[in-house]
Image (cartoon, rainbow, N blue to C red; front, side, top):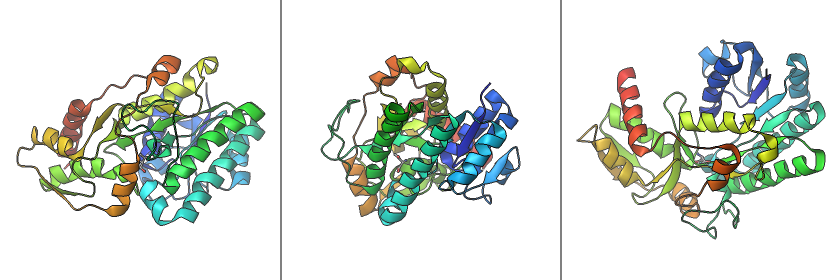
Length: 315
Ligand code: AKB
């Protein structure tokens, strides 16, 4: 039985990984931490939760020891658009937070999951069907922290034999906790806007292709890589994973299958557009499929149907 600690547990990804892990391993075996405790109050009150800054290694070490944690999911990070507005803060949270988590893992013998991102690629990376091992010269601060994070996790694995694992997430679409500060947030907002008002003003141009994934697949990926046989993982900390690639025009067309009058207009945000233009159009994820059996369930058609049904049901 695993004992798990999740840092950044109240965010878009953390909140859903927390629920899935608690179902799988039992509520008391999944300890949540976050810098805030005033969001997702239901989750905060549903089991062990501690308000901790992810850079506070002493407190995190105490919690690992108190609960006999053996696995850490380190999800605390600023996303790309926010990181571009506050680069120094992004370095502090994304890099110093990760270094602290790795040190906690090293000193206590924990395994550790850290998400990387399509943001770790840059304008000189091959754009289509981006290979697993390729050029990574990102031009955003978020990307700089993601490449450095991949390398740091590799370092802790080969230098200290820490069981570090991670995947390069594309944009994640979900309907429980909203994302915040990401370039791909539009792909979530568009569904809420379609159901609420039938129209959406998109911050990226209509022909901007990016990789995306529906939350159930993102959660399944995080759990299966941590449960995989470690001896089979050659690309430990930086597996490409994807489920679909689309542009806003295509997403709008799929939404019109459910809401025929849906209208999309464009008001390009130059910061987000520059970041999106520096990222791949689509990834190749063969290594993840071979090394730990990655296989997505949702495509754009199935995800759109599920998002709209769920949001209509709720509203
Ligand atoms: C972002 O847009 O910053 C994130 C990501 C793709 O890593 N969703």
